Length: 399
Image (cartoon, rainbow, N blue to C red; front, side, top):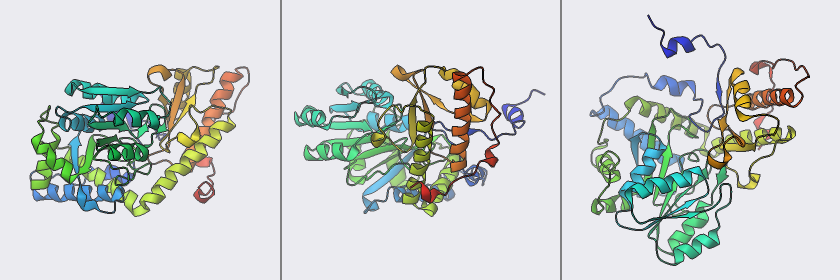
């Protein structure tokens, strides 16, 4: 009988550490949750599960008044949540997309498919959003809705949602935020930022399995969608809200077992403490960036503008990205490459998921040895020690 992929991978002894910005390594109890039990999505058991996941997710955002918000879930990646919003809330209105990287541009492309009156205010990749330019553009009154990415994963830049949210509030504009990679990793003050709709994903900083996304929104804005004709069927945001609010159900068959996993992943964060989880992610990023600089590597953007989720590093001129990627993969380490104009010019290292300080140290030691081989190919370098042999410093020393 032909071997399955699972049969083949059982032979691997080494844990593969995912330093990509998602999917990520997840906790054992999250994996186990997917085989907890089989339930029908039209029975009370699933409604209870859906209610639990929604409640925990609202707690994740630490809002003062959760009663003003609801969360709908979609079986699909974060892009599904974004398309659900952009195909459901705009109608015949005018929408402005702010972009300074791959995922801002993706929002624009999605919106253009569904909304004729879509305009883009485009900044260079890795360039901060200019709030004065944005204020001037919004103040002209030629747009009704503003949408943007919080963490622009393609560069690692954290964009200023509070400042832009204030601009939207001052001019009476709807505000949409893509928080697919930042939710659970960086602080998001939904209320202070005046966010009307926010998209997120299970498989990034929340550290669950891929396949679920969500839209958090104001109840009042969800209710208004009754009067807006959706431009998709499966991704109709109002349809999902109506099934949630009326029946604690989803309109279509959901990935039921992934809800069990997400429920446990959220419980893990809430048990640890939301603020403490952010501190842990920030500490991993701090340790990582300090080590990268010790290796004389240059970061793409200033650290003050970075998210804690991912670090983007300029490729040194003595090694090609694929060589670096393959050599790290041989040691059980997975990194990410650059996109668009940054392809082959940078590599990216995530600091989310079930990563430890030991994992960061193991990565840095492996990276240093590989770089040394390519910089000085005639030198022999000892093999890397096992991951378990590396001592870790206390987390309290890094925060």
